[in-house]
Length: 314
Ligand code: ASP
Image 1: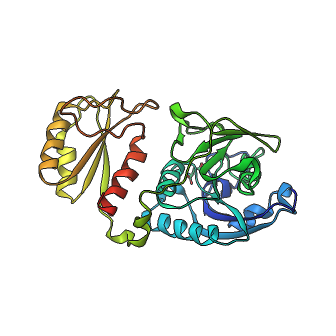
Image 2: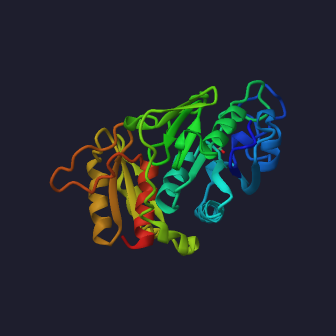
Image 3: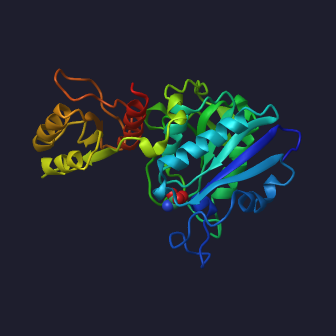
């Protein structure tokens, strides 16, 4: 990779991209986050000569992602983005909660330079790992290729806006989508083909980074389904939850017993909103008297949004 491009900082957080398995053919029995950001970069010959700095913010399986790590990552991003010598920042991450981290960063970090998240579905030890190419594409975008700005993610050659990203598949290499919005760009053989404008950075909840995540309220997701029980939601309220996202059926419809419990929760001051458990489409429209809608957001994104609203008193 050319060395004339700007300096790119690679922040590692773990995930399968940094995972190693005892048997190379093993795509599932591996330890996520085994490699540091420096090891990860050193293992990709195509990055030799690129102007990179690395820092490991965490080395975790992203299924264990937590709010304190989000704030640490966001503050590290702000620090490096403010450096005049830095063109952009890459974040390596697990795929499991990538959409939540991307959504969180989009809403909290001023990203006037590219912030490019990437991940992998196969561990670094696989015969044909997807991480190295994803990392090369991410470094390319973070270096300014294609004019990228804002929080985006690149996986399997497609660039998604962080705010639209969602994981659709638990095993396939091409596991991500932007939902109805569609991808922002494609990266093909080192060339960025833009399909729509880069996302403007206007982090409505930047103030959350000035607070202590240990003080953040509990916000939970409850799925509506055949035989759903209001008692599930009542138990969360009794346990101190301050916000509930209902992952509704279809266009955000909610089982009568859950709906009754949601109304009880609202009377006790708990914030409630409805998303859809469907893979795509979100919730369209807002019938009179319906619970507030999370719109396009997936239940996991809607939880982040509700959490940030409560933290910032919005
Ligand atoms: N469990 C892993 C993680 O999210 C899965 C992956 O990265 O693909 O860290």
